[in-house]
Amino acid sequence: MNQYNQAYLNNLIENLVEESLHLDYKASGALVNQDNKKAEISKDVSAMANSDGGIIIYGIKEDKNLAKEIDPIKRKEFSKEWLEQVIQSKIQPRIEGIHIFPISIDDERVVYVVEIPKSNTAHQAADYRYYKRYNFMSIAMYDYEIRDILNRAKNPQIELEFKYSGTKDELQIIAYNRGTVYAKYLNVKIRIPKKIVKSPVHKQINHDTVEILANNAIREMVNPYATVATYWPTRYEPILPQTRFELTKISLHNYPFDYENILEWDIFCDNANPVSGSIRLADLLNS
Image (cartoon, rainbow, N blue to C red):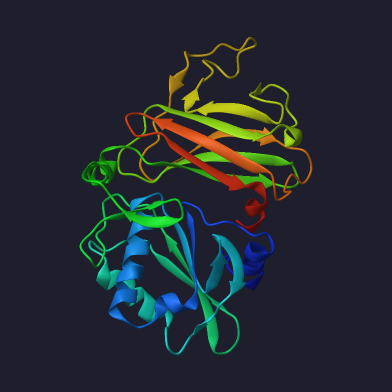
């Protein structure tokens, strides 16, 4: 389901949502039909793919990296097809899985949300350089960073997915292996505000936060019909490419979606580099 609409844009502005590794704002002037602007588009999009993926919103002005106001684009001058053609013709190799979502402001004006996946290879911008996201900017990469990206295909690529059940006040956390190599050993550290967690069994790391540990270990019963339950030794369940594994479920207090509630995580999997991330629990309502 497409979550991008004017309410989504207004929420970014009203809450002064800051640019980040995964979020970038561009005013309408970023799409001027000139070669240097097309090169800048290729730089920003390739940097997002070379880093951890994310979205670029063309049609929002920022002030000190905070969403300021909608600055819509004239649809007839810069169509979705024009933007897609610029992205795919100016970046090598082609980035698979990019989606462009138009948000109509009125009959003539539009905002484009460009959703960019994390890539399995390094992508070169129009100026023959490689870029990454760093401190709200797209900056040139060092040689070792490029080689590290090229090695992504040799390791599992684990992402977390979240499903919230309002009827059960329960957050389900799922590991998704989007890579081409199966994941053998997976360990995840999840940090969540203490005030919204019902269960007291988790490790408290400070006054406000608890840490939850999860992995892909399973323990199967020898005979589920026996009077006394006995189990096989605990083992790790491999997560095959393009498959999912439920890590844990967290019981939460009713409606934990205050805007300041942040869920953070660290992912450790086989020989892959550790991956960290975060999400506002309020954003789960729109997923």
